[in-house]
Image 1: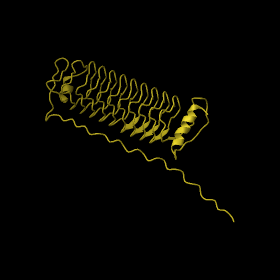
Image 2: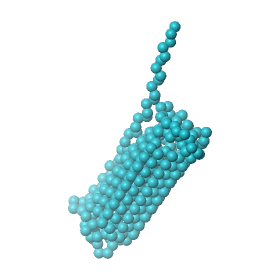
Image 3: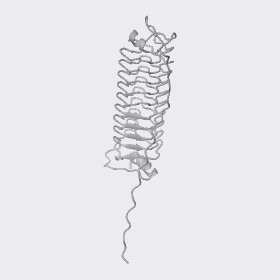
Image 4: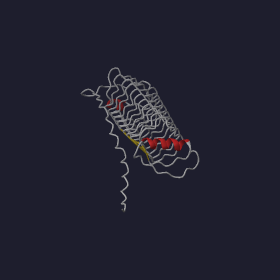
Length: 290
């Protein structure tokens, strides 16, 4: 039995009622096609495995290694992958609900068109990751590394990207409505045609960032240094909420919003994890003749 099968067997043995469907094993990199994982398998070695469409239900894979694994269309429900290594893994078109990826390594990973609800990526390494067209409303990217990451056309409504390192990231056509971008590094990032309505940019750096055709309606730029940003026009700045400390390129002038500006953070409550799978029914008693 290969190391992979031992790891999978250990994961299944830890939790009664975990369903699995096995197929033929073809080579060391093939995995028995387990449809559902649960229980705990911290520090498991599952790198390079084919787990497309797998279901992780309330599972604990903290610190697990899934380097380069195929997790397309997988479902991560109420599971934790804190500190796991998913570098170069493919999670495209997956569903992630109420999951914890805090401190995980997702560098060069693919999360294209992934749905992430109530998910935390706080402190995660997403350097050069592909998150384009991702639906991550209310997701937590605080203190994460998004350097060189692609978030083009991503839906990041109310997302927390505070104190993140997003230098060189691509936010073109992204929806950052009400996003918390306080204290982040966004130098050389592209916000072309992005929607930043109501976003908070306070305390962040934007040297050489591109804001061409971006919407800044009621965005909080009070005290923000945008003097080295590119693509800004007066009509964009007129819609934002600035003050006398806001620094802008050229002769652009920031103005306060009518009635002032209030930024209210509502803590996101992640969805409750799903109930574990029901155990199989016991076999019916066999009648005996006396």
